[in-house]
Amino acid sequence: QVRLVESGGGLVQAGGSLRLSCAASRSIFSINAMGWYHQAPGNQRELVAAFTSGGSTNYADSVKGRFTISRDNAKNTVYLQMNSLKPEDTAVYYCYADIVDGPSFKRYWGQGTQVTVSS
Image (cartoon, rainbow, N blue to C red; front, side):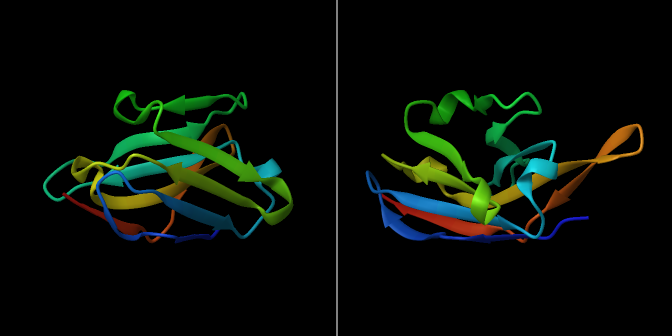
């Protein structure tokens, strides 16, 4: 199991920046994949950025060039640096972690952090 705690959300004007943090309760070396989704009202949860099981990064087309996912292994924390924010980035952002569970994986979610971008 793992507990994920997000922080760093808030209200920002368009063009501004925010950095989200996701602190895991166990070593992220033991986590198969980890990243961020967001969910706007009335929409499905969508992948924003992630570290894949192979260690590479994956970004949604809508955030490429603006968002950067990074990690601090010593702090068991994954970050999402969000620059050039747009009103359409407004959503609840959720951190997730996939952990091996027998022959498959189990996905864990954080509680979410609200990001609101004003125009």
